[in-house]
Length: 417
Length: 172
Image (cartoon, rainbow over all chains, first blue to last red; front, side, top):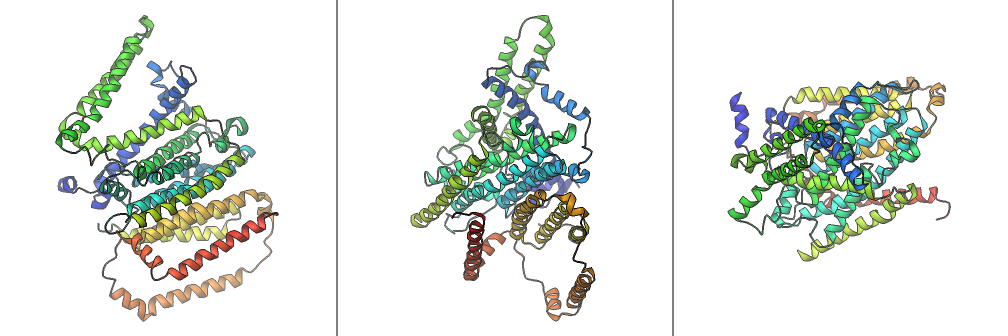
């Protein structure tokens, strides 16, 4: 048994490929918990960042700077009465939120956090990811229909129309990135998520910069389409508050509603990681081919720990700026403990053994985090599209541009070879 | 890697696909039928995966379960389901269809047990099922030997799109 567990450590492939059930289970648990934690953190960050962009304070009462707010929210949602409308289709109403969450979380099977840090590597990686994430719209449609109410139904109709329209442009953009993986000596491309990052490593360039500006165009199209796919502002017509109360989840409350939120945020992280994998070099650190040598390797390996120390520093700055009134004593101590925990994690990340293992995960997560911040930024900045504008952008701008970029990539690839 | 518990997964997925198929034709509510059909399609995708055909499985999920079924539901949702449920079915042909299905089933069983070709395959399995280059193989076949039929199929789709636009739009 112990041999079975330790034998994987030297295998140098993902647990799925090694066929090691134990480590596959461990990885699944780690990814599941990590994503759930990220969703909670994202919930807090979104409220805070949105508030600051609108010159508000945001949550400040529960814990120092509202740090415990997500936990309070979660407890509130779990204790809330779970209402199923009288005339609703009970079975479908019950099934819909699980469909959304399952579709969002299943995609993480192939997300490559590192060359060996993925649950498994599939030959059809990116195809699997797009396919399973497109199942999420089924859950939304089911929720809208089963609620037996007008606003949810309109929200679900809008959502399915929007997702189908933007999936086409998204697919074309993905194909042009996959096409770039085949520009090696053998002329054989790959759909595997790990293979795509390795292709960028071999070619020595992130695909976003490849054949400038063709890679960039495909990337921008994907970045727009992925916001529409996840029903986020400025494409949040399915849950437009001012028109449809809350869109497809109007009739949901308590735990089921929180499942929808969990699914939405998990899907956001999933599509962001697709964008990072396809165009931004996945787990690769900046300049892996030009800034080589042990010195540079050492310098870049210090980044994860340094980031956490920086965060801890900011937290201690916050501790200093806390009001000195005795009323805030517990909050100040709590914030100090939080900063201490961050600093401790930072110090642990400097240990050489840990440092080498977490590097690729760090770069991947850092790139995804940029996208998550962009999501919040969009929401604070852009006004919502009208439905006909949305369709016009999807079919008349993004789709032709993505097809043109695909054809141009193919031509340039053949000519320059 | 070596496959794990293949016979269990085969029977499990087959049972899912069959029960989904039965539900499709027995449910009165068309939305429930469509959802049962999604179950069947997903179970079939799992069986394709077991047959070392990941690309086919992926396409099954992305096209049938993700694309076509969403359109199905989209249309069904706009129909007034309550009226459809109360209405009596007017094509009472279940005897004919039952006999036809039974005949087809018997045919399958006979072929499965008696066919010399199947027995040959069972005795001599293909040398190696390559999962790791499945997509590349399919690409080679589609754009190599079966280029013409592939292009004809795509032309057919183009004609269908043009037809749909002409029918939907009054002024072209």
